[in-house]
Image (tube, rainbow, N blue to C red; front, side, top):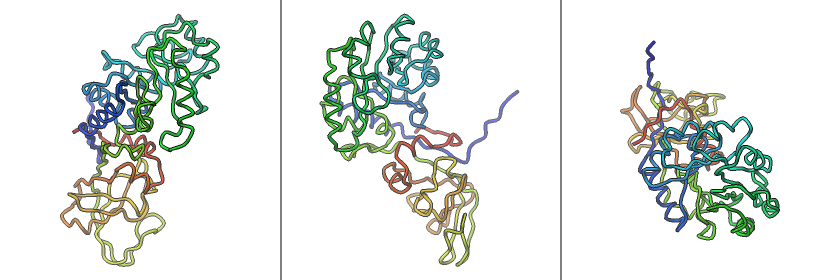
Length: 348
């Protein structure tokens, strides 16, 4: 039976040049360290296979995912590349861990024991240097927990790299103290924000995520470019009169006659209610303010500035991540990873 592909009234316009430029900037900031890429959560929602391919063409060789399902999906496209699975390995993960090309990032003593019992082999190890999340304790490393392991990367994660706080230096000191204490070929601490903290944090390998995709982790990363722009089709154009109440709970009332467009996008697609009465769409550079409350899959914008727009036309949604985060009250990470699967994704 043949299947019919239906074009979505939503699309996500993705800028390959911006993605590559962002990685190149992060690579330069990493100095002598290799620059990898966190592509977990489907590359923060943008599409892990295509992101990995684009970055591999640019020179990236080290990729990090969260789960074995993510690693297996990428396996056919990963010739010559390194994939590390940040959540380690459970007994049920042993088959893909043994059969594929990805390595577990062992992050508990139990996982270390399981890996040794299964025959060992190349792995990465996460050390908790103060975040109290995943990772083995530095004390366990000193006591010989990792003895006998073939460790490619010894990694840790900064808790507050987007802030100027003493904890950054504390974690740096804790991780630096492990240098030469294991068989690890490389050490890795810095995420996107950590790269901006300076060369001391780079070690041998950096692991940016947010900044690859247009997020601004710190002011020093002002060169980072926007990668993802949602676009939506106009479902209806209509005129309302002064005094008409607009949208759920009548939170907007027309102060005069207005031209409105109803767009095929809403909070089910990741355009959250926090943008109600604050967000902006655009058509050819013309601003189209969001009017009233964002619905589940509909959005109302003013099109007084765009008399030529009609049903079926496309408009773009302002989605510069730092600005969108400030408007919506959501983090840049949440905004990226929530971009809905109803959007067709197009790289240009």
